[in-house]
Amino acid sequence: MSKTRLTNTKTPNPSNPSSLKPRYEIRQLEPKHIGWAAAIVSHSNSFCSTVWPVIYPDNDGKNAIQLAIDADYLVRHQIDSGLSFGVFDTEYVFKREESKATDGKLYWDLSEPSVKKEQGLQGEADRLLEQMDFPLVSVALSYDAHNALDMSKMEPLMAALPHFGLAYHNLEEGDSRDPESWRPKGPNEVLFRNATSTRQDYEGEGIMAALARWLMREATIRGYRGIQIEALADAVIHVWSMAEPPFKGAVVSEFHTDTWKDVEGKLGFAPAHQRIAKVYVDLEP
Image (cartoon, rainbow, N blue to C red; front, side, top):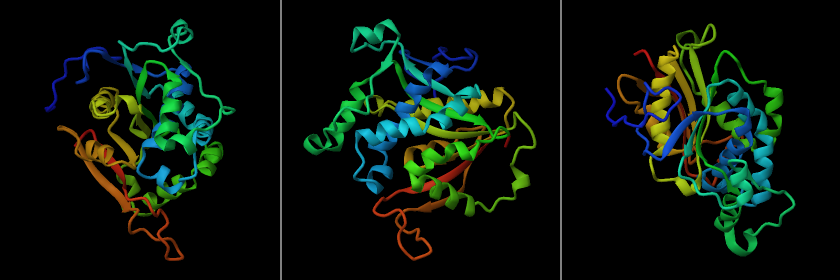
């Protein structure tokens, strides 16, 4: 049984309520949300991650905006799958009338000057966050593992974050499971999770954890037997690897940026300090 109180029925499936505060609603993401979702993922990774801002310290807001553009395929593929969900703030107060007229709007502009030199990284983060005037506050992007990504379309994202592909490669190399023990033989068996992000101004409310646990239950209802996620944040690793009963989570591959060395013996992710893990959740233990 779940340890959390499931009282919020504002979900795509009211028979599967969430533990979120009453003001929040879980919705299935639609194509119209692709830009917003990409912005949340990019902003979180560019400014809040313990990995990317450390490895790429020269990046600024323009890089964050470009990253959202480069991540379009990854976000689109998952939202088009019908298996990606977001948390919306039903009490959100729009900053601009123009945003209110369209139920939200993103105002990012590559031509705007950076304020990082004068105001630091957080000042740059605040500048872009103020321009994210929409009620979507957190995303959990997923796709059916049988409907694989087209890696040729991932090239812009891989080029923008070279260590992104390296992290996934390391996790794949360290995964000693027999593929037959978990890989899907068809659709509707295993979910792949790729992008868990909450807006910086909504952090600390347990939104990520509530959405993750709701998704585990929802995936089970939809007939899935497992969920796999690669995580670069301690909180995400914890929520998925310590899945609430009856589900069973396990770290199946991991490495630490403090100790992983490339073929030349160099710390390839220095100076970042982060455990990076691949987690598999058995929904039918």
